[in-house]
Length: 328
Image (spheres, rainbow, N blue to C red):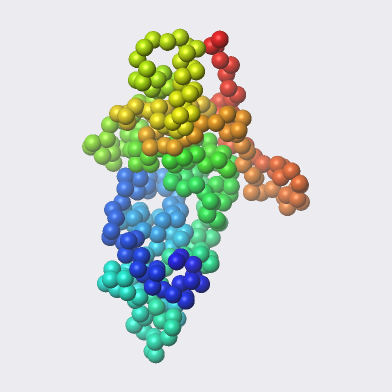
């Protein structure tokens, strides 16, 4: 349905569905307003979004690159006449194919296609131009709500590999090493950040700041809530390990009150709403290095593929090995 070749042959499936995504159906989230707060304070160099719902604009964010386009405008596939989303709203809401008002005579592709990037289409020149400039000026990268699997936007973190990088996501991204991982509900996390920054006017009145607890403390509280009888430390470790594998998700340890987030060394913070399946630390490879985008082409032919890499920006204890357990 989102393939340009399919669309050119049959537009009806797309327009039967398009009303579900059309502008005006949804409102900006807390996270969109977090981006607006950054921009208002001169902290946002650029917001690269893969979303096509125009909610960044609805939140008032101006410095946006719409990597995959948006529903804000539509263009005729034949004559390229451009109209706004409002111009074709009535047709879209009724599931009709909007026909071009300028093409005479009407041709098979005299159809207004929303200016979103379909599979088989390239991104706009604005994306490539902006990335080319911003890699020189970026001093902090924040990635929100993506698993970094869709190219070419997924390559942005590698282009700025030497600057600090933070990810805010429900689950870890395993193929790229971020300096800080904030895992969970993005709206909760961004509200917590706004509160810590002291930007109280942008924090929802109903928001209650979360407190940080260690992984051991959260695990103990979780176990005690389910097993009120006293136990030895050895019993606790065995039962907690069993329950971890029963729940599989470390975020399940967090209290239902949703007023706690868990710190997992060296730089992972688990908030309510996260999905974090814990595995052996060696398998998790928290110390994965980033590829150097400036590596020479000659060295890239190495069969191992491990050359020309740069570590994450130095952070205190970021890659420190696990401390030996004091428990016997």
